[in-house]
Image (cartoon, rainbow, N blue to C red; front, side, top):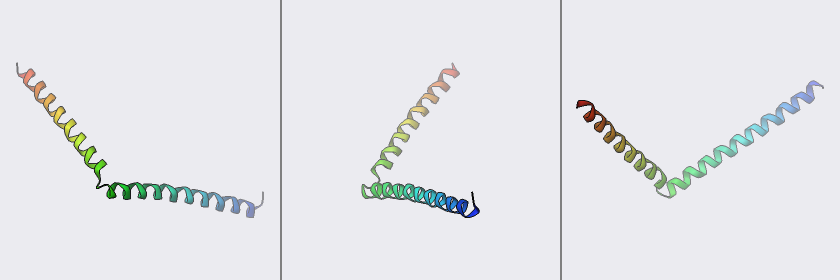
Length: 70
């Protein structure tokens, strides 16, 4: 294989990688724009779910501490 053939292969592979990376970034940007357009409802739902789980875990910790005091 000649050096020029190898250079062409490397350049082609680099172009493919850059194209795929660009597509992934575009998809992420589109999802972000969609979330903002929907007033970030999925982020609020996720935050609410985390807060509920945190409250549940805090209740369990208090119960465990109270049981330990007996």
